[in-house]
Image (cartoon, rainbow, N blue to C red; front, side, top):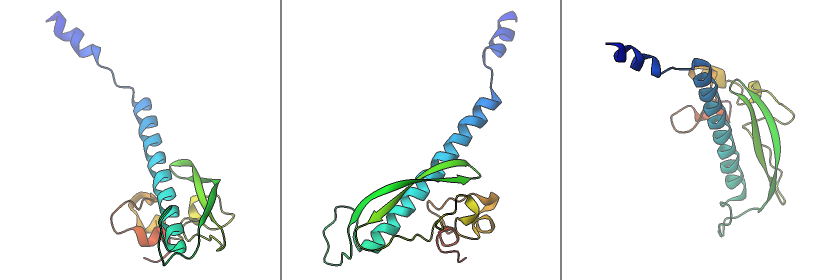
Length: 132
């Protein structure tokens, strides 16, 4: 019976470590999702994807610049695309805004818990265009 007691004490759970890890996982997911949405928006403006040849192409990419955005999940680094001729003004984040409240003008209302995640389900409209 003494060994059973020892075995129960071998496993310990550090709740703070788990919360920190989950928080970083959510922050990373938000960052990846927003960067993916920025890339998709640039593709739509250009009329073609990165390195894609298309007769419908309107413009070409010219790199990107990094920008910080503070969200409820933490600070995220956005890679905002630059285009050669057309201005890249995104509906995802407003120019000069640095806080999540600018992300979609109603994303807190559209997504339970106010998380700005659009990787799939029907909440994309509120996060991108403010409609929804």
